Amino acid sequence: MLRLIAASLCLRCQRVAALPLNLRPCSTLNSAENQQTVEALYELSVDIQKIRKLKGWVLHRSPSYTKEVAELLKDMGASGSTIAQIFLVHPEAVLCHPEQMQTQKELWMSVCPNHKQLISIIEKFPASFFTCSSYHDNQRDNIAYFQSLNLNKRIVTKLMASAPQSFSRPVEQDEVMVRTLQQAYQELGGEEANMKIWLQKLLSQNPFVLLKSPDVLRENLCFLKDKGFSTAELLHLLSKLRGFVTELNPHSMSRTLQYSQDTMGCSETQLRDIILRCPAVLYYPESTLAERFKGLLGAGISMSQIVETPTVLELTTQIVNYRIQRLRALGYDIRKGSLAVLNGTKKDFEVSCGKLQLRRERPLFNPVAPLNADD
Image (cartoon, rainbow, N blue to C red; front, top):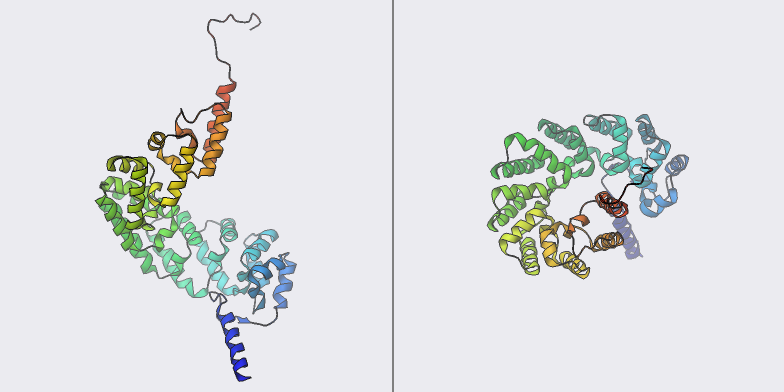
């Protein structure tokens, strides 16, 4: 009997330990749902069934502050439907103490232009706003640090929203990575006057670069330098890869480069030129490249066309096939023309199709034909 009781307690402890612990240590787990929470969410028109299915543990926590948090959001201009959506996506918000949320609001307003903008961010990134109060000091220090770099407030806000981990950790860690990026920029010949703009663009495109190891960045740049890329070309790659150079490693890049060279049948010099025109080739795994080469060649596109316009490798096989069919319907033979028409965003492609359609419908002007007298 004692063994059964001990086993039961152990299982219960395991279940409790598995619950998220990043909220407030003072909240407790009840065996029954907190009816105060459930009723408050019902009043706000929140889909309780979805919460029970996805994050039912929240409804068992006590105390909760559903009405208080909803009031704080309402005071910032959030509509009823917006508040309901925030609670549905991130029900943990109801467990955040109002005083902590007031502090969080003040922190965010130090970089947000207005309440409307902040509500928009909370709606998209609720987990970034409803964080543990123990991180507030780190957040405050990181905000002050990035502001000291004279970065645009919009960039700082985007960093806080999309990469909250970099603001929750000690500021010293972000300082090390930023210094590494700045040093790499200068050592590769970047101009001091443009460094702030370059850093802003890099952090905006890939906020998670701050969470990477500085050693990985140095190691990857050394590898690419050994492959024959000049300092100017390395700066180009570091900028164009949007920080992905910190997510790669020499082994994966070596395999990708060798596969690409063998498949396209080009020299090392030609391969470097292809990489500079399409840096994405560096971080695609061999399986992805193999699928895309197969799709392009299967559509009748020649390898020489791919080498001439390597950016077509950035498109998935599904997108390529769809665009080829659209172009074929407009009388454009991709096998004989440039692949450049395939590139770009969906909007860019639609513009190209519109021009082809216009060219197809517009009658050719014949200067010898007699003019109509009525004209």
